Image 1 (tube, helix red, strand yellow):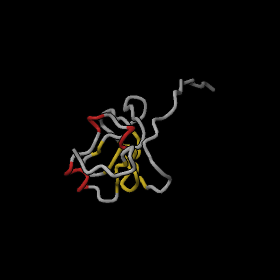
Image 2 (image 1 turned 180 degrees about the vertical axis):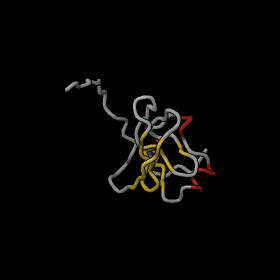
Image 3 (image 1 turned 60 degrees about the horizontal axis):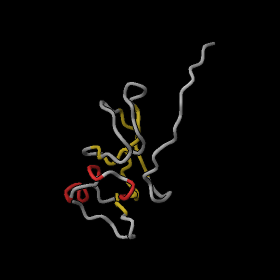
Image 4 (image 1 turned 120 degrees about the vertical axis):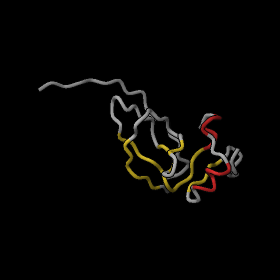
Length: 98
């Protein structure tokens, strides 16, 4: 039996607490944890479609906004589109969109 060894550097944790829900999603392009998936929610972990296109999309929970890159911060329309997702800022308030 052959085995394949892979390097594992850890995951980028974007969740602020343990009260969240996600659904499986098959990605067609690489995605980073915190990316908005249009009409679905927020990508939970980094996805490399060449290695494995399957990932999870958070549709309910609290996301640490301060762990996201500036380009990943939600717009006001995205905040409104996902009422069950809150983006927590470092000062403890919620992000209202850029």
